[in-house]
Length: 101
Image (cartoon, rainbow, N blue to C red; front, side, top):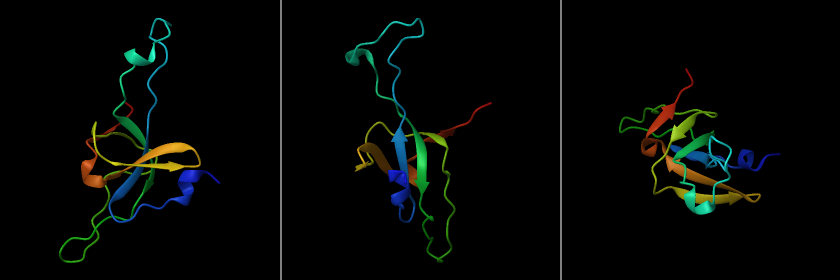
């Protein structure tokens, strides 16, 4: 079983894994670690049920499993599951969803 399937986010939290920065440039040149910028994009692996408003109605989540999202540069909670690094954000912290055309 994959590690992220063992974790169920509560309320309006989302489990994501940052996309890895390219190790080569478009021209095929290997990039040193100092030249790689940290990606602010991530893939959604698990989504909570959502949060409730003051009336008790369940508010739907803005993302779903498999979405590629833009995350804030700072923030979130880091978690390690079976040696893989993931981050947890609240639904409202997600900046946007990247759609394929």
